[in-house]
Image 1 (cartoon, rainbow, N blue to C red):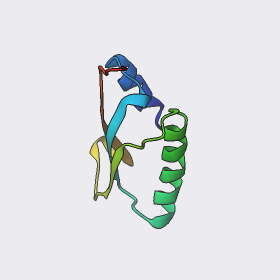
Image 2 (image 1 turned 90 degrees about the vertical axis):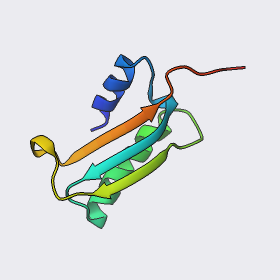
Image 3 (image 1 turned 135 degrees about the vertical axis):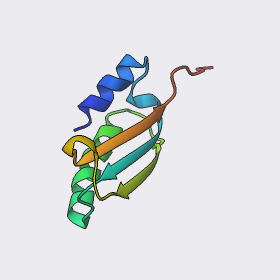
Length: 83
């Protein structure tokens, strides 16, 4: 599910380690679906090797474009200072 996000981040010259904010729009916003997505999302973040988690908003919506069930937007740093 989140492989596409990895590809977009790579094309932008960054990666999941530098994600600072995520919005998740979901058509089927039930407790079960939230847990299912959250399990995948936490694993995705844990694989980053960074202790600080990005801010996240999880929003239930009536519909999404092109029949999608989930839409994700993310903001990531593209340059950073390691001093």
